[in-house]
Amino acid sequence: MHKNDPGAIDVGSKLPRHVAIIMDGNGRWAKAQKKTRIIGHRRGVETVREIVKACRELEIEVLTLFAFSSENWRRPAKEVGLLMDLFFIALDREVKKLHRNNIKLRVIGDHSAFPERIQKRIVNAEALTADNDGLLLNVAANYGGKWDIMQAVQKLAAKAVDGEIQASAITDEMIEAELSMSGLPDPDLFIRTGGEQRISNFLIWQLAYTELYFTDTLWPVFDRSEFDKALSSFAGRQRRFGHTGDQIEKLRNA
Image (cartoon, rainbow, N blue to C red; front, side, top):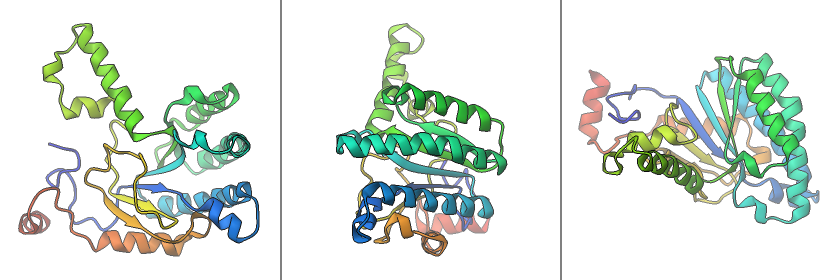
């Protein structure tokens, strides 16, 4: 049974267990304010704090944020450098606050492309918060959905070559077990700010049955009230997972 099948979850739940967000619009907000793009990214960090706090208060189990995609390396070198500096500083300052609030941090993606100083900070940050059992915060950095599936398939292919498994016996559960977020519920709600309506290579496998919510609001001004709008939209939807509406109602009323 798929972990997000109605037979395995509470179909009557009004709050998502797992929220995934593409935080779009930092640069456009900064431009509108006649500020530099890095100011927009710094303002975006403040929004992250607010949404993390909201998820913790609402007892949402998992929050996954798309911080830096594998395609973002194509941006101007100066901006990429400033983003690396901001990431480095955030790993130092924010992680201590996360730890005090019993939040567990995981950084998913290909860490090998980051400078060594950032790789060390990631290891230290994850180690510091490893035993926390409150909100799980996944930060996707140098992450791409295609990369995630590719690295999972490569691991299974290596096992097949070594004779540990038969290629013909590979299942979707086996692939899921090798993905970056193995063992976690798939996102129930996906939010993208900034007006774009696409998933941009984010959690391609995991978003198969996720409810999508798009808003024109730019990330730096995506506050608690905007987050509540997304949650209200989610609460009003009927999630079917391939079933009929009548079947879902029977499960709900069982």
